Length: 372
Image (cartoon, rainbow, N blue to C red; front, side, top):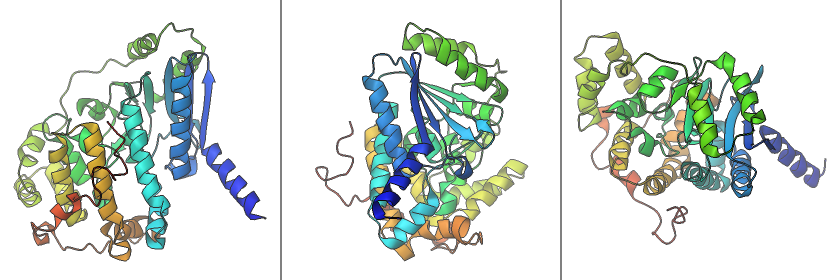
């Protein structure tokens, strides 16, 4: 096969991974990479961005719907995040497309948060990492009885990026620190209680809901949102599980103090949380606690610029990168035995983690200088 044919085939393949169309008064985006749980590649990020820009300029489109394609058909899993195997290969090869991936992904996250039309995310099944990045800025965030939501990046030596500092810092109390540091999974109802979703619709109802949205002659974007909100299941008011203990333990100033507080509570929740914290990269746990606390006082654009600085530091060391090692252990060699740069939380010095927050760029040269 000639190089030209190879490029054309690769491009067609990427386009098959993102399907977009206008039906009735709505723009539809379906992530169609079910074997990889719809993990995002650079081309997928570009295709979603192109579709959103086209829908924004199209007066026929009142609102945008986004969903994932499962192995059995539409819905099933929304998006498991970025394509971490690609991150690993690109980092080791010194491939410049890795820098482009994060710059363009974070620009897409910003576009979604600031989109001028209703953007509706159907967060069925797995919603992690980059999947949170393309759903948390939605004007209507729908979860289901199958939703499994998490920001598990500390377990691969990374941090909750894609605006994670911004949206986790807005969770009630210290739920954001808990989710960001431990990477624990939550279900749909817990996502609503954490302020990370707006309503729940049972998974079996989604195909009919989607079909109705495509066939109804809505008069405005607000009418689309109102109708969807009228479809939410009635849930009993409840607080996030173990919230009092979360607020007590995750209010401390340092990861070590948080771990000591967890160790003093003899409950299944505390034992599991401490085990998750101890499996994570000790260095990145320090970075993430600072990230979420700093983001509490930042705009979305400033948070994304900070995260672009952080992700540069995560990958530029190549073989010495904590993130490259974390991905190797989870997704490449699959030995689940990452050799972290520090044995435990105590071993991380107060001089190390702040280096991640030093930008390698000036304000004028920053790759996300255009975000406002």
